[in-house]
Length: 70
Image 1 (spheres, helix red, strand yellow):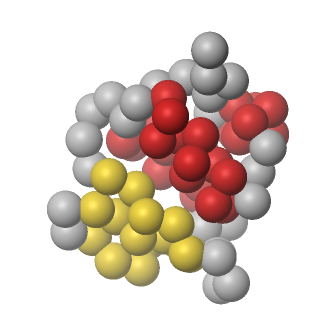
Image 2 (tube, rainbow, N blue to C red):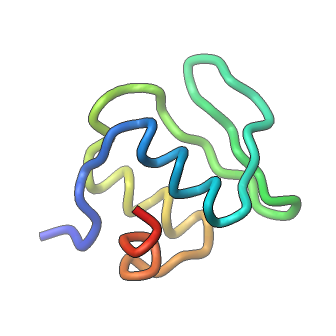
């Protein structure tokens, strides 16, 4: 079972904004960056748990740390 639940697109954006990421491009996907790491988020609801796990890993978070941001 995945350690990160599937969440809505907007909840994912809020969590990454709390961590210091900013939106740098929006289209079919949203691209966010904190200055050194770039993360791509699909714009659909809900984002499944496996994709959320990949987003958290790419952003440099453990599953537990990312769940705390949600």
